[in-house]
Length: 343
Image (tube, rainbow, N blue to C red):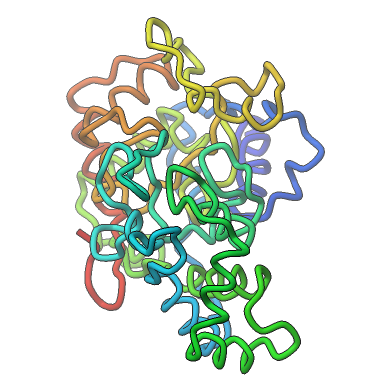
């Protein structure tokens, strides 16, 4: 019982805090690394604890700001040569990401990390794989000036929008004290992105009491997910996205691979050796429709990703039954957008 209580408290805190980062603010970057999981005898009790949570129903931002943000999300004028928009790398019809190992930006330049899904990003406690943006507002402007993405100068983009009568009118109406500005642009984009929650996943219905919403195999997969230790990093309403973790806890994932700066993870931000190869744990929501996987897009299939996680994060060679049950569970995490299941 003591072991169960010790485990439940930090996990409950992580699950409830969701996107908030204050709990980690004063901890060293590797303090949030693997939380030991209880053994199978505790699983029946843990399944009723707040390890994984259904998506919260939140009041949406101001509708006018959301509408402006949606237009901007699809606006190619945010790029240097009017060729790409936010939706280019994050198409909502494809699970909120483009399905490419590395996205293509202005002039066909390829990025150096896999574009994560924009769906449910508001649940993340930080944005980007390396966590360099603490909020959606901070994240929204960074791709504009990234030479591998929109490759623009922010001041030039603001002039473009100011010279557009429709945008100028809408910004002045919604932001009368500033009109088109870096702040108002980021605020509008973030307002829209906060609405991109994918409700009605079968697993959410299961958590909300509809026990027949997922199959017996998927229910067993959920318990296997907890028992194996997957939920030590993937928990809360986002089923991830609320902590940092080293990629290669139990084995060196990068051994023998060519050096890539992007593989250094949080180290690129902090310069701390303890942050080398540390990344934000991704959300597993909609994971069945957001291949390829990991920051480097190296896993083409969900089965391959599960096997890699077993070896490098858990130190286990997963059995065929483990794989089957885990995959059945992960399939239940696919939600809906505007009444349609993601695909």
